[in-house]
Image 1: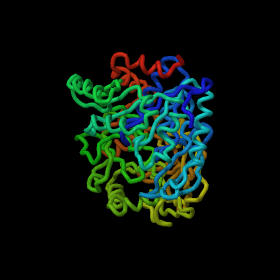
Image 2: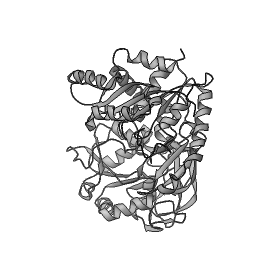
Image 3: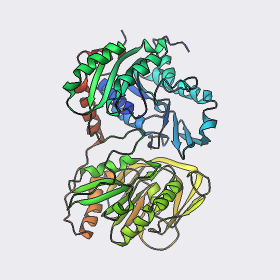
Image 4: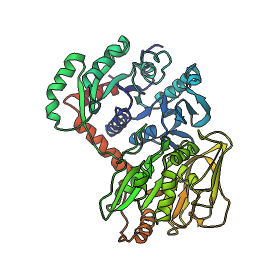
Length: 500
């Protein structure tokens, strides 16, 4: 592939990493916002993403949440060209493949990687469409760009960067340790044509006094010959991350007098941004739950979304969490299920299409009079509803993304949403669920629900709290990144982003 840049196409900056989970997606999002603030027409791109954190475009197509976040940072509507291939793991070796927003089946890893040329071509075409529409593309890599055994079929890291002759930025995670080896090892293994386009290093997730690393910066630049663009201190940013659940404590004890809320953590948990609005509640303590004993202490248990609902419910059964949820409910706790979590609350789950990475059928938790049948068709759409319970009339907006279809099988309870039944949401005695991602984002509705729970648990009710808008979180993160830039770094980045 000729790396010479076509003047009619966008310029590009590729954000690569020394490993997985070093912070590439958020560094890319921060750069997207900074370039947008500088007046550039910028768009994100990642050729292939492996994650269960997915969302829906305005057209009703599925794409990775990391690229949705980056699109929002660019002040653009998300488009599937920004994340053309998405792999949603079902188990250790198999994943659902999403291509340009639509499910294309389930593949084992050995079959998928046998020949990636077709998907590489689709991704390249998506990149060229973006590059023809925008001035600048901020690309994100995957894992490390120098996995030598994978380089011949890796179309996520170097290939798209070469396509647009993009400048390369290497992100390092100092919190993991070995930051000097991360930098030198990665750079030394890059092919010369790519090594020559590296414009700088980003040392991410620094904790402590950054001034103590000044000598380290000098040494890092000396051994690599590459400038350090930024040393980014750790920040509790409350933003989605590509391949990990929302960052909250795990199995933490809540302070006395707080509303105790636990979210069940499972191997294929997904769409955990749904929990973010809860952080606005000053009396609420939120933790992930893996310990059944901790589940019994909660006032509210939340079952989030799942890419493999049946498999995750089987996991909860094997660990004792499923029984702990039933016991907590019997003792007075409230239970909220979101998407896959809603499916788990019913009487049974039947996986006719084999989409859920587990047994063909499994008993539900039995807290709602519903059952869910999984078929090949997948619902992916933006959705707007009006609440019916616990207060009527609140406008609820978000999106749906699910294979299962849920229906009533017994009498009991009532609809959660106006003019629509169990196919979208239902509630019973201290148990409720919905397919709507974003349900907790309506401040007034969330307050009404939590006040019901507070009253039932002997806690004082509270006025409506306003959740921190995503736009504010993006801007706060981008400004944090900009403050972390070293002298001359922004000018170096702009030089790579703008035509000479």
